[in-house]
Length: 357
Image (cartoon, rainbow, N blue to C red; front, top):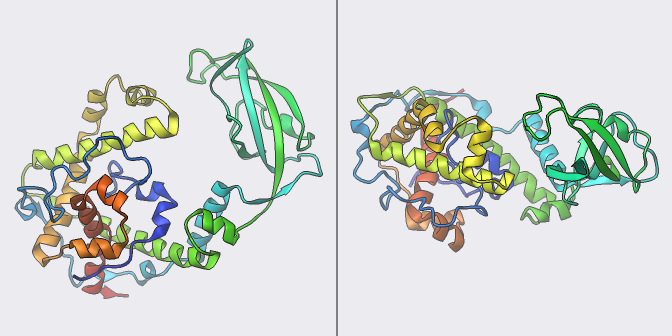
């Protein structure tokens, strides 16, 4: 099989970059493997090859030219700027900074703090760090009123109260225009960011060198994927999108929104959609019909290329990719085969059969 590359461990670091179907822009990707919904069948509607069951994609789409096309050579390299941006994100998430505790906070400092907010003596939802600590940068991070400015002059280890007033249009009825008190603890001032082997090992790598090599390949794979996605956007429908494919796209998005609600915000799907301004799940789905159809078209176009060129992913290929038994049980082989086709095999085929300039 053409175009296979080893699955990058770095995908497990930045789940946002490998997160399901992104409405209006992306095709499928694996998402966070640690937060799959109970009972959701990722492989539903897919055959043993990872194709849509009973759907011959070439019957529904007109493909753009995809062989012999110009390929920008820059997508085959990772820029220093992109590498550094990702490293900054890793360091920020890991909280790996030199910890300064012997001076007062100054304007522009990044500091790690904990806080608990209350209105009229009652703590409110979302107003606490839960003792987990959070990094904020004075003059940069956007907090209500002059919250952060009141931290200037205090030293790490201090615990004190600050008073703020929520904007009248804050967006939550129980907080709009209300005076609040935050009990704040300054944990430390963040000094120089640190990238150590210990940080790398926390993300599943043996060393910083191992992480860097994987990161560079991950960035290149993402650039290939962007090229591929742009190409798929040039495909056109011959008729209507098969309902089975449209249902697949919608169901997947609803699953991802459900996981976002549960794991990121600790609320139900309905509560999350209400915050988005939708009265119901049905209203949300209806508002995105055109985006769903566009995503479905991209799925069909990708499958049509695989059909035309005889591209496939075998069980042995999945084993070579390094998928764990847990991942296979969670997502199913059909889903993982579709993912591998769309993210790796077909983009590599296009590059191998293109003209790199």
